[in-house]
Length: 143
Image 1 (cartoon, rainbow, N blue to C red):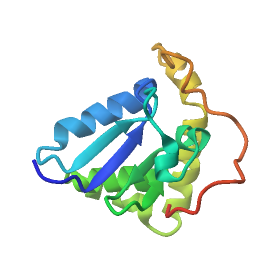
Image 2: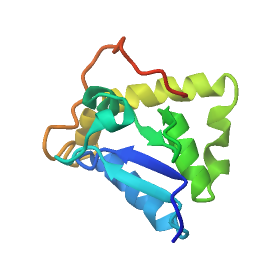
Image 3: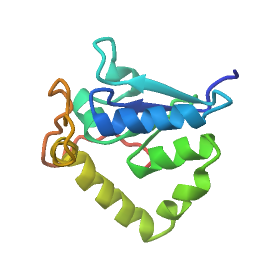
Image 4: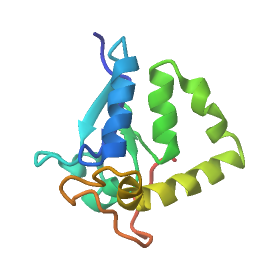
């Protein structure tokens, strides 16, 4: 296995997030995608220049040089690294990018309730509850 090309910061307490991380891990045959569970006690979001609230609010991904991408851009990069970038490429097109990010934000804000709707435990510890409302202190990162 070589050096990772992209790291996905995921919430291991969120069944949706955990399932997506596991699915991507199975497809990462070359070890180019790293994962870090933001729900563990040892996770320090300040290492990435974000707060726990910010990183719990939407998906974040990190490049080896420290650049951060958020929302659907993080998924696009993760899929690209495992060779499935074509699946999410349209979400980066002008117009569609904005729509994809808004849809994802709605999902992220409501993922606990959506999980309950599908009959599963929405959040094992209650830590994955995402506060409602816009955080005006968001870091300057590439979306």
